[in-house]
Image 1 (cartoon, rainbow, N blue to C red):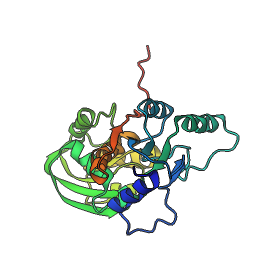
Image 2: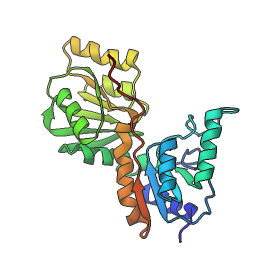
Image 3: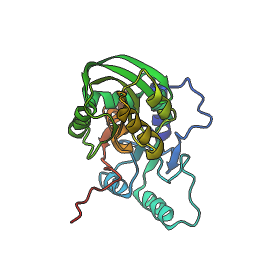
Image 4: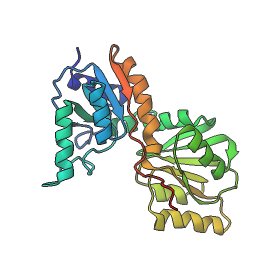
Length: 266
């Protein structure tokens, strides 16, 4: 049986080994890396509910894309009851918790982007990598931001995509800033881009720029997908690929759900 550390080496070699990973966040956050693993849980975030579900499934290891302890490098908050309770839950679950973030974004075809594009199912051409976790495409057939938002709801299961800027102009040149990468404002300002897709955004800067652009007659839109909705299908793709990377593993994706709730107020 393969150990968690051995699986991590295979996973990182499969994705990318050419970058400088001396300061990577892709490390084991909890558990013994020398533990033999056969059942692998995958999710976007290691929420308490995901940890409990993975433990009930008898997972040996949990692979997530984003931080589990509220900072990029998972530095623990001191004397924090939430942090302490979560660490205790992980210890009781017996999981090896590993973050897989930098390597998949540096894959020749960004793994997160690949999963999102497959799930969207829109024919495109001229795929290009602009810089870290930022990619661009041109759709074969133009689409309006309103139509694209509806497709996101139906195919990506995003409860409420938020659209700033133009709603009903036909657009084809799209910048894919999934998650929260740097350079989103530069992509929004580019003459070569009609729509920017991102997970999170600063409203007073990005949102207002897109709104002003539309009201001044420019074809410009920003669609905020939510962090989870903008990267989730990349981790689902990992769940599909992992048995090919290491045959014999039992692999399951666990849905953490969106961080926001959408209650009806009366």
